[in-house]
Length: 127
Image (cartoon, rainbow, N blue to C red; front, side):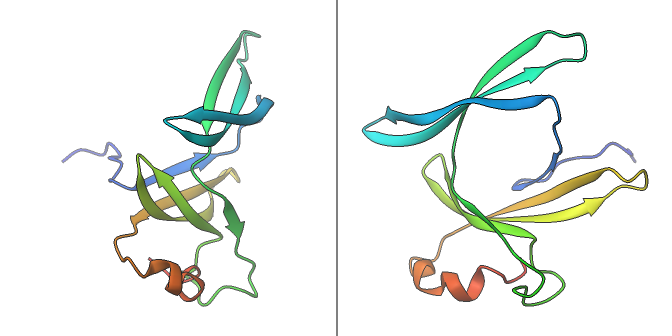
């Protein structure tokens, strides 16, 4: 049995990045569709710099404690699209023993054609 962490499909983690900034933001037309994009600048501890082009997958919303339906509701959520597939995005705030914060994330495919009509009811629901 291995103690190595294995990432599951549709799940992951995000962390705070203090050596990164958005240096450009705008739109790029790709395959006939205007897409929001950003150029990120990373500065390594050795002082070297790296630039990365990122495309927006969708807007996210903060789920306040008052808005949450239950303790399993995500802290941040939204509808995103990646590779022409629609997903529900949920993110949960976590804190390591050393005080470091990170966000556990989960993507759930939207397969229900009537999802748009139910979005308000489901957006805060647990996965």
